[in-house]
Image 1 (cartoon, rainbow, N blue to C red):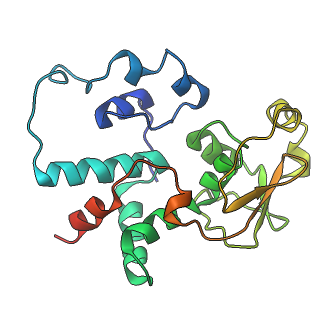
Image 2: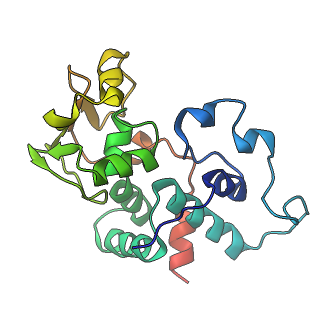
Length: 207
């Protein structure tokens, strides 16, 4: 599958908000959104009236880019969410949140979701003791995520083990060694700290 290889800060500027795609840089004055708070391109600073469809589309694109999934994959997540019991928008967010790469990011084992995705692809993590190198792998309540023993000597993971523990969402718990964690439950909407109006996405796909 192809992947986006262009400047990720351009994506944040296009959506008009921080998507936190570059880790610590997003919290500094070097953040592109903080320096140039308008869309990229020669018409980025022009005034443009957004239609109802345009608002829904931008919300969908923002969520898709936050989690780094392609259009076809995102559509599959939506159809799965639609068939599940409960509220479709909240089901969709829960499915995206329980991707393995996102769980690794939420546990503080990577600085950003793109970095977490790369680390997972390179086989640095296990789920219930077995190596998993698929970023989209769905973790479930009771699953234990850990850095592989052979990867713990990497400088990146050594620094994490020696640093102060981060704040993790309530649906996860962090191990005492700082290099492992456990999935406690399926995340609820109030446990997902994203400024997303998921109902707009549901309306977009319902057309």
